[in-house]
Amino acid sequence: PFQDFRDFAKSFNRLLPDDVQQMNKRIDEYARGIVSGGTLFEELGFYYVGPIDGHDLDNMVPILEKLRDSESTKPVLLHVKTIKGQGYPPAE
View 1 (cartoon, rainbow, N blue to C red):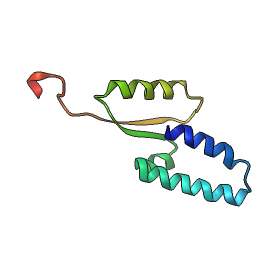
View 2 (view 1 turned 135 degrees about the vertical axis):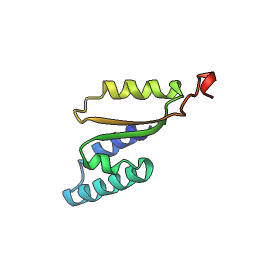
View 3 (view 1 turned 180 degrees about the horizontal axis):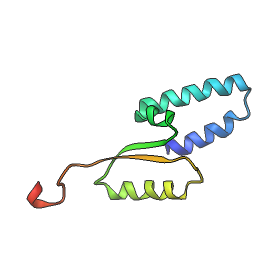
View 4 (view 1 turned 60 degrees about the vertical axis):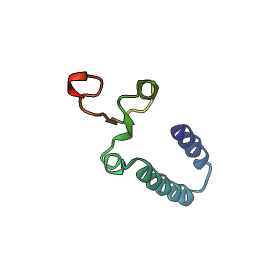
């Protein structure tokens, strides 16, 4: 949902004057940093996604499919959080 909104906002932003576009770009970067903490990776040229729960496959599979089907050529950093040994009884 957040990515869909971002895509819409970017399309709309292209219709605005250049100075407003630049301001909106900074707002977008700031908002993504607050939501995801991924601004460092984005500054390095990565598309940052996460953190996501690595144990919730119902949520993770659609994210992976969307990343796979994306037309973006940027490298992707997928931040997945897991609990060591979860699902393996001797380790729990």
